[in-house]
Image (tube, rainbow, N blue to C red; front, side, top):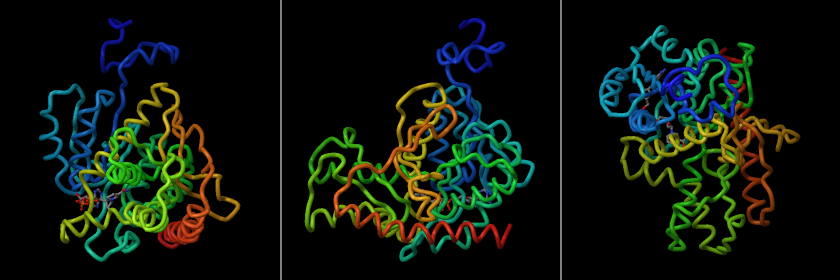
Length: 342
Ligand code: NAI
């Protein structure tokens, strides 16, 4: 079998899934916004991932340069950079299994993620239109903020094109989980590699709800308030420290690469791959909230199983109530934007 199907080549005929999983994966991954602060290190990390066979980099500026640079790294994947414009975007997307979208402007000090809406909503809408045409079956991983609104924007665009698959659309909230895990390890002097704090809700301020109690921690009073606040507003620490030069890029690239790796693993048949992510979710639909981040089991078709929020403390319930209120408005804003600006 190894001889019949060397690395990077499609297997001949239809092999059963059990056989296919023995081979290295043959996945095209596309980064839209690859020239940016997140896009560059994210492209680097995807180049280091042996499950990726082709890496397509697109930006309105600079993607060919990033591709030439990353392309010298001695891993097997082929890297292609695409020029700005419709044709380049289409080629970058065609045949892609995973489309990562970190295109758009980042925050400056004093800005909320919602302040980015006016600029990023149309960028994400246009990229979603291109993806709906050129890669309608790809997993779409939205990083561009405000995620609570840009994910519904993508959904509306895919619906309008008649290709919406709710199992394939993800808002990347992994950085919240990474921060929540890192911050508790600093608090408790534990190894952060062993921490995996569940974070639910959305991806901005009060919609970010860390569920510390589910990991057996019992912070209380001011210590708990401080911890929750740091997880909810950890991004501001980076925005302030960078003094106007942008927001989190390196930690975000790591988080985006981790999420993409989880999807690739799950696509290859690995079971029990679970990541919190912002998806089209049944959990609060009865309250008119169509998207929600909770722990999601990933599989070959994208979303395999959306896990419930589970047992939470009265303190966490209060955080969740505040989250749901904000989230509803953020989602409605995205849906409305596409209605008014199709
Ligand atoms: P950046 O400004 O450094 O890079 C953005 C890139 O997008 C630029 O290279 C720009 O040319 C490109 N771009 C703009 N319009 C485009 C289009 N129509 N097509 C293709 N590329 C386009 O910004 P950075 O720091 O990389 O942040 C990107 C986004 O990610 C921001 O919206 C930021 O708020 C968000 N973000 C999300 C996080 C999350 O946890 N989901 C964490 C941190 C940032």
